[in-house]
Image (cartoon, rainbow, N blue to C red; front, side, top):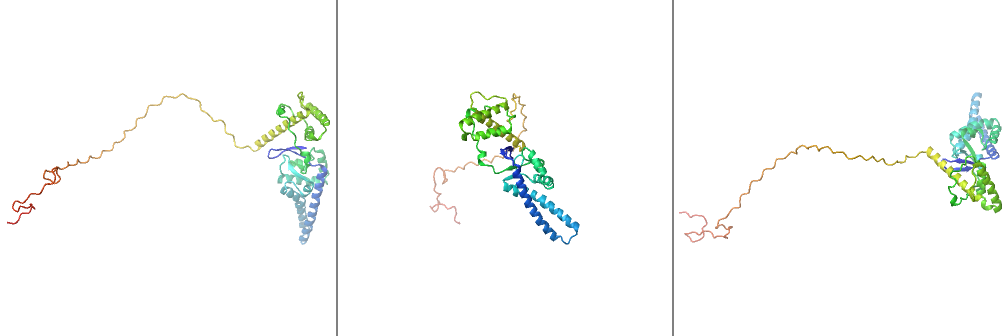
Length: 332
């Protein structure tokens, strides 16, 4: 197993591809590439028959580089690490952190592969894969990539049972740096197959794995804790640390907006004496409008007035005619 950290800060246990499956995938890719190169060469020779020998040689070199080198690079870039041979064998090329490869990774792998695969007939690539712990050739080492298996049996990725609740977090101070990956893999496989083992065989395996784990950590297991529960608790502590480290790495790679700090409260200052008020300029007084003339008193009517208090008075009578006086005097 090879533990990788993806771009989403998720710890994965990927299985590196072995040399036989990689060799079969490379062989299939070479067959397809050579067939394409022969077809392209025949077409170019027919199209450039009228050119001179130097031009035909230049066209042949260009076709060699474009088909045998540029073709695999383009296919791996567009398919994110899955060429035809790798697709048939269930393999994929990924980065060291588990993410998909890009053009620069495929370019380095293709350029180095031209030397270690085509020019040396794969001898250098086989030696490098056998020496590497994860089966990487020189192109993978320089490009920072890894060929992994995508088709993993479902039974090998079973769920690891959690420890008892009263053991959660009890081994947070345990030093796990000296425990090798092989021992972790053995503990994981034991925990996933615990229900399928015979009780006596399972207890013996748990005691042996717990002894190896305590020898690597330098701290004996607490007294009275079953070996299987101890292994489950230590495995959970390792997963918690890996997840914490993965999320810290992701946060350092993609920092988010700064969290708001505590509000700054100014220190208390005693009140000071206020300065004397500034006198305001006098407000201009607008001149008052002239008072209206006093109204004439209500006229008083004489007693003989028809509107007087005495009521209507008959007009004076004409002394000569005996009738009421009209105010006109007859002519003499």
